[in-house]
Every structure is written in C-alpha cells, then in structure tokens.
Picture 1 (cartoon, one colour):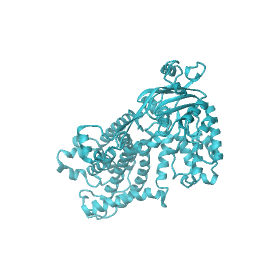
Picture 2: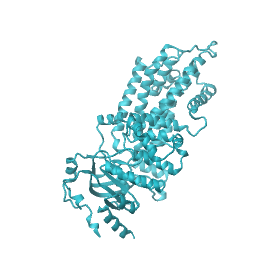
Picture 3: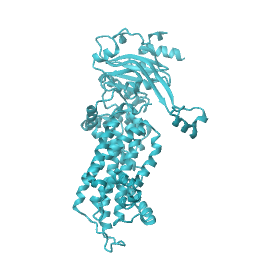
Picture 4: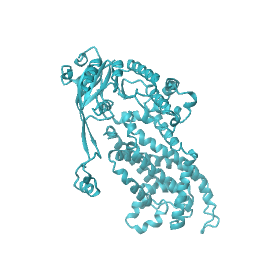
Amino acid sequence: MAELNGDAERTPTVVVDGLHVVYRVIGAGSTPDKGNAANALKRLIRRKQQPSVREVHAIKGVSFVAYEGDAIGVIGSNGSGKSTLMRAIAGLLPATKGAVYAQGQPSFLGVNAALMSGLTGERNVQLGCLAMGMTREEVREKYDSIVEFSGVEEDHIKMPMRTYSSGMGARLRFSIAAAKSHDVLIVDEALATGDRDFRKKSENKIKEMRAEAGTVFLVSHSMKQISRTCNRAIWIDKGVLRMDGDADAVVKSYLTESS
Amino acid sequence: MPSSIATQDREGPDPAELAARFGLTRTTARPTLLAYLKQLWARRHFILSYASARSTSQYSGSRLGQIWQVITPLLNAGVYFILFGVLLGTSRGVDNFTAFLVTGVFVFTFTQRSLNNGAKSISGNLQLVRALHFPRAVLPLSFVLVEFRQLMISMALLFVIIPITGIVPTKNFPDGPGDTVMWSWLLIIPAIALHMLFNLGLSLLMARVGALSADVNQLLPFITRIWFYMSGVFYSVDRFGPALGALYPVLQLNPGAIFLDLYRMVLIESHEPLDLPLGLNIWAVAATWSFILFIGGFLYFWHKEEAYGRG
C-alpha cells in the first residue's frame, strides 16, 4: 500500500492517529424496575451514575492517512462505525483517545438540518449557503447556478419547500450542499436521492468536487458506486479498520465476506 | 484474505509529526477566544438570516401569519389583566395599572423566552449541530434575535397603549393618570440595549446548561414561573415587598425587577421608580447585571464549545 507508507511526494489531507471514540447513551434500555422514580432519586442522592447510561465504544483504534486527490469509499455493515468515524473526522465528535488532524475543516455534504420547510426555496438557498459559511456576496454569485443545477422551476422556487415533491426537495438540497468547495469533503449516503438522471448528474458533480477538493470520503452501501467513483476504500468492521487499499480490491473482499 | 493489511503497521513517519509537517490541525480543538469571536463575526449574516427565517417560518402555516406576532402578546397581557387586575386586585399602589402590567408582561416575556429558547437552542438542534460546522454560539444568539424582533413589535404596541390608558379615568384619577408621549421615551434605546445584552448572556449560559444536562429542561418551567412571580410583573415590589423582611432587597435587586422598572420608569410618567437599597442607581444596577451576564455567559458557553452535540 503506497498510500500508507508516507510517500513524500503526496500531501496528506487527513491524518487519523489511533482514534478511539466512546460515547455515552442516556436512556439505553435496562431492566424495568430500575426505571422508577424512587430508584432514580436514590441514585441521585448516592451520586451514582444512571444504570441506563451505557458506554458505546464505536471506534477502536483506527489509523490511516488520506492524501490529496484521494476519493475514499467507506464501507461496512450498518452500525459498524462508519458514520461515527466520519463525524470524528469532521470534528463533530471529539476523540476519546488519539487524534484526527486535517487540512482546513473537513465538512459533510449536506445542509438539510439548516433548511426550513416553511420557507421558500429561494430563502432556503440563501440560508443554506450562509449556514455553510459563505459570505453574502458568494451567495449572490452562486444563487443562479444552484437553482439551475437543481432543476427546480422558477415558479416553484418562490414557494415554500414543504410544497415540493420529495424528489424536488432532495435535488435542491443536494444543489445547495454541493455549491461550496471544501478541502476535505464527506459524502454520507447523499447520492441515493432524486431520479436516475439526477443521480448521474450528482455523481459527476462529486467527481468534479473531488478535483477541486483535496479529498473526498464517500460512505455508501452501493459497491458499484464505490468502484465507479473511488480510487481507494476503507472497510470498517465493528469499529476496527479491517482493510485499506485499492477500491476494487477492498470491495471484492468485502463482498466475498458478506456473501 | 488481505484483512491483515490493517493499519497497525507504523512504517511511515509518526502521524502527529506528519500532520505537523504539512500544517494539519486537530479537528476538534476548541478555538481560542479571539479566533472564536472572529468566527462569530464572519457568521453574522447567518445569525441574522437564521433568526429571521425562524420567525417567518414560525407562523408560515397559519392563515393570519405574521399578525400573530401582534395578537399573541396582546392576548397574553389580556389574560394577566383579567387574572390580576380584575380578579385578584394586585393593582394597589399603581396609578396606571394597565400600562404597568402590559409593559411588565412584554418585557418579562422577552427575558423568559430568551432563557427557555436558549436552553433548547443546542439540545433542540442536535441535527444541525452534528451536520455543520459553525461556532455554536450562533444558535443561542439567533434565538434571542428572534425574541428581539418580537419585542420591537411589543414596544410599538406599548407606544399606543400607554397614551390611551393615560386618558382612561380610574377611581383615583377622574381624568386618567395622564401618561402620554414624552421625551424620556428615547431612553428606551439604552434600556433595550442593556436588556438585550443581559438576555444574550442568559441565553448563552442556559444553552450550555441545557445542552449538557437534559434534566434542567424539565425544571425550567418552574424556575421561570418563580422568577415571574418574584419580579413584580403584576404588582408593585415596593408595595408588597416590605412585608417580606430580608427577602425584600433580593426581590428589588433581582434582574427581573430591575429591567421591568427600567422600562416603566422610562415609559410611564406616573410610575414611581423602585426605592433601591443603599440608594443604588437603577441604571448602574442594570448595567452591572448586563455586563456580568453577557461576559460570564459568553465565556461559560465558549468553554465547552467542542462538547456540544456529542453522543
């Protein structure tokens, strides 16, 4: 694996160093008699931790280095820790042990959470762009191309987003999210939206963004998509880095294992 | 199978060294205070547009829409008027009780909602916090701005209500208590500025508390209600306070009572200002509260910046 051996010619963009992520889940189910008020009070008085607080060791010592120009597919079964790892890379979850170093601020592709369904598409474009950290001038500059890329018609863009069909909404959300260029971009299952034409269009957009961005991480359950868009893949299994290498090779052994 | 190619092998350079050599930085490090302020300044348009988006979308489903921003505070004041002015008769010692009460309700609502919404600003927006990168103080700050817009509407209403109640005859004043438009109304600007600072600080403080301990949110309704009753929204603190002994100065100096009195003093001519202990000046007390809370709240919030949205 040339990637890992610290090739002096290539610029690293993300360094994950012995990363552990443990988080506490409050209200994880436990035996029913522990949930009553009297017991809760007793715990409070004795300053004991709630029994319903469970620690989840989601990432157990992952290390790798991503370089400029890498498009890295992230694969693994549900609950393997892919999303946790991505959130730690983006700096949204603190590392319990180890560290993540990155060039600039790795960001997720997605602004859904900042948008409001009661507002018009037009205002959501502005809001979403500002949420991603654009300035007002940048928003004004990019507005037309965002709307054009989404394919939402002129009369719809002035209507509240809750009146949009789900496909139309998804297309607009993707277009907003893709308007910002990032040093390190994380795409988490965002491409399964819209009709087939739009899916193709968005895959191309990702490739384009990869050229602009240093590095793209693509979390997907579609092995075809990973083979198509990535040059490298990492396989996360129960919080451990199971395999790291050429995308096709990793996909192949993942498929052999799971079938 | 090549599962042996896990990355525990460390043939390459030390990761931390490699990162340092290429100028990579830790993604979860808390920014310094100065850097944090710069980040916030860079996001100022987001703060404003998020606030205005929220207040627009709040009523977007209802037919009357934004008119609710006017109706809601009036209904609120009406309920308290019937409850306290008519049924319980707490109006003793207040010349223009309607103006007194409506000012109290509008002003206290601003503080109360800043507190409540501040507490929920992080814990109720985890989706957003987990998806995007921005200085988290954006959320509590823009929630206060939403309430600030509401206060502006309430103030416009007050400017109409006060002169009207000034000419309505009461038992003691056959020609009305005489409150009307006056120059001291201009002092409302520094009063609102101080109040705004106080609420921003309060909201930041509660945002951290609410984000890191979900239990506090359960207590909030009780805390705000006690504060409401203590602050003289519907009675004169100086009229009922002396009976409380040692608690009286606490009641007078609590920021709730201080800010209510500041607005009333400025807006209502017939209002008798609080008789503060030690002859303290009300502006000085209000400013002290504002700066303590704003600076303290901001530092307190910033100190846990990297922990919000965890788990």
